[in-house]
Length: 526
Ligand code: NCD
Image (spheres, rainbow, N blue to C red):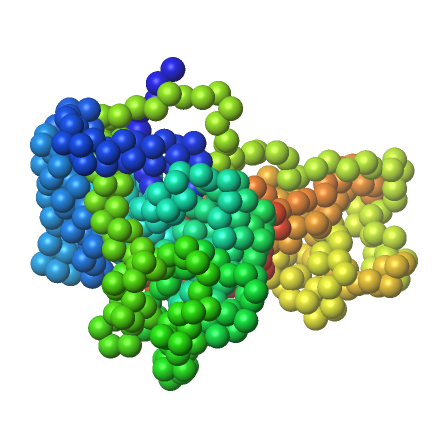
């Protein structure tokens, strides 16, 4: 069975399975060889008419120009370079409206986008996909050419391809040092998943604490089975007996830094800049890479390195063209992949497993709360929400009680609440609601505000139903939730009118667009 890649979106590197990424690398190798031997490369040409739109809202040289050239490799492609400076973005038009329009100019479009806001490609995949369906147009494909600090999946493709070339296409092991601005650099964030094409992975993170890799990415690397080590500077790293043979430098992204970090920029820069006196400490066979650009003043990889065998970044940058030609071949339907059955399921499954779990009711349980003995009259009919924020401090429990009341609008009805000390010494909260039954939607909402709580339905003075509620697999469609990342396309501050949506991964809620992880308390604004 063959599978094609028409209408596929590459918003994050994980959108392509490891098998699919390896397929792209094999094809790139084949194309490069054919080109070198002056052989025919027609099989890589997109056969059907396609509109390729290059939409860059943030500055770019390599990514943009290599995409324009890669698009022009395809003779049937109409290549459009969108002038974002003079577009309706400046009349405050939304991304979705703009891209809907562009989609209607052809039967099939491939968009390459670069934006300051994070999560834009995922949003476009969904909303513009709906537009295409409404009008009987083939769903467009979206390629993320960098979205804020989030990801840069095509840089990841060319980086991994280059590492494989370096290793003679042996993917058994990689030890890589990531050096520089690991906080803001999207190219290193894509490494967290992109490096999984190797079977055994060691990552040395070299950066002062102020610009070190965010903890949630480090956690994800560990979950992915990487061995991770941290160093404050290259000097500290070079004290190691054995260092990596792949060094990946990144620029300090001054344009994304806050005032506090900017003040220290010179000191931070020194810690991640290579010097001549370090040369003899570098392991034999090492290559230096860099997504580029390197700044002309005080570059991290100074120009004296250009003529040394350490220089891997020029070959790397040139590979950008080949990898992107092949990616377009795939999305344009020119090359198809033999589909294997044991392909890894990478995409998040929306497992609808129950999060409102019926619990055993001990028949004859009178009145509800045992705590009723302390003076609260048990209710005859209604609902008691119990075990609220169990184990937290009384202050935290009280604030959860208030939050539940506010969000579920349970403040202007006959009700009572309180905090009790359990037999085990921990505290928990409850809200008692005589003659009030929560709807399924309210219980769902409650499970996202206060998971691990119990809902008791009381009829004729005894508990008739009891539910233990857990964090739902997906939280969306509530107007009180929002992503805390200010650069996320869903953040109300950005005015794109995109409702927030979160997926549960482990005990975190991850924004479906920018992938920022949240604790469940963080998503609610009241
Ligand atoms: C990078 C980017 O824009 O994320 N460059 C690139 O695409 N080749 C790195 C950077 O801006 O420093």
